[in-house]
Image (cartoon, rainbow, N blue to C red; front, side, top):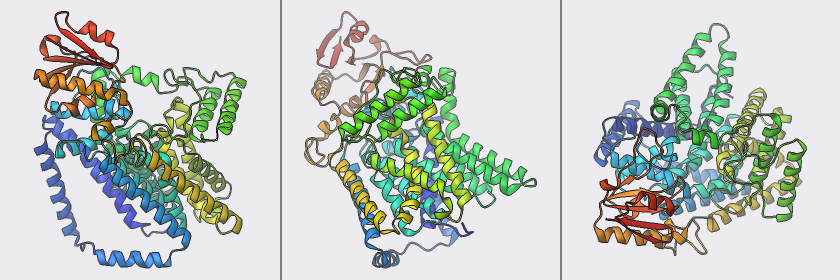
Length: 621
């Protein structure tokens, strides 16, 4: 590594993402403090941001970008590129472009988004603030809301959800840029950087979530941003400025999802150790100062949310129901081993049924050999059971066999002979150790679940630079070159199939974005519910009801009501939030129920008329 800035354009992209993300979080919290979550205040916030940015740009005296010069530089690069490099660029560019089109065309239809991601945004907008509210869906209150903070600005500015999918798409681009910059920081060639970007861009979970309102790519983007910023400071003394950027990334990861801490914490350890090595005795105060700055900046971003959780539940982590269901409740070596093996089998699942069954049987055999039940509730989420079919291109569970195997091999070869891949062998070893630590922290703290593959995307993004370094060197020899090209083609085809036939957004086949109506697209996860929700909407519109009571359970869909009945007020008839009592029947004009209709009948007054229609019930005076 040299004193020069590595990949400066990519570094600017990382800085821009962190700045915009942090500004979105802080400004939303500020507006919430004044009950001012509305379109005009949001427009003012971003107008001030634009004015500030243009003023900063003018003071620095930087010329405006010149498209003609950039285009000429790109043409020169293309002319000098090898066939493999052109193939990599073409595949990456095509995938990102197709994903962008899908993100624009598709209505949000992720399952969790229907339950809590997007519903909580509607409550914030209706209330004008981010405070807790009565609800039967704990996840709307307890889980970290960083991704939804970004979406909330789009909701306030546009009045709808048409641009929601663009946030995850942008996060996917950030993952590609940050991972490619990391391999450049280790001295990787242009081809190594493109191979790294290719591995990230073709991962099926990345291609599917790039048009989604999930938050896993957002988390991975913040984690990768912290990693590349930490590597910048690995061989130089940190300044308050660099600590500021790292603190922003750490805070954004912490406020977006708890798993973000599993990726950023090892990178902060690497940063701290590097600074101690550089600081020695005289520099201890400097190290302490910059470390405090990192934590202080992160606290500005995430402390308000965690404080609200503490106020509502007596714990910054939120409801004990959630904190007990996801984290591991056994931490003995045998349990961690079994949890890791199951996570690995699910992540590497393939459509080759005999191979998939054999590996799963092997994991179950090892589990019993070490005295651990493979279905032990202390290491298994909810009432799910191992194994599951995970290869199908579904945004919640699709496996990553090609990229996963490449990541394991990249970590192995780079760890064995680091000097072959970089002049900074010691730093590469340390980075590998931190990536391995991130993976170990995950398997030691998070229970196996059928949807776990989306939670480990950040580990794949961190490991991708090691794949790029290894494959680039391996391609110098003839027979590995041919095998790697075949692997590249296979990865490109799998990504293409994921985009074309993925679920619940696809380009071709039944449920295609091109041929399916907007309403049907929203209900693709549960098409059998479409008619039930539309029937209830018609009943409410015919009655002219304005204040609607909701009866629902923890995993029910709430968001469709906000979309189908804009302008109405929705309040919960049950509440699992201790300090937030639910609404009473005499305070609403009508009640709609989903899920367990026995609960509905208990809450609807006897003198009301209750009508059911499949999954939904409607009640009125």
